[in-house]
Amino acid sequence: MSDIAQTPQPPYYAVIFTSERTEGGHGYVEMADEMVELASLQSGFLGVESAREGVGITVSYWDSLEAIHKWKQNERHVVAQRKGMSEWYSKYKTRICKVERDYGYEAAHE
Image (cartoon, rainbow, N blue to C red; front, side, top):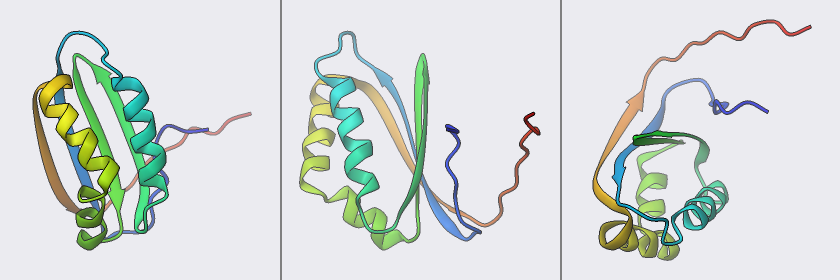
């Protein structure tokens, strides 16, 4: 299974969440896993990609700005946001972008 999200033809939206973590786990990994699972159940969710090597970057894909707004206000997501500010992140930045074009490459596998 690929770690690259399978998104539809543009346009669609990307939420880019970039963060620097504090020391210690404090339940972060479990909550992050829960958020991915919960987001995948939300109307308008298209996929997610995430990487952490010092700076963490998570990009989630959505079919509309309304879907992003509803996700931001999801009750459990609000709990995670608050814990992020109080326990998990020393800083973060969220960017919301409209994807107007995408392209890619995948090597042939034998």
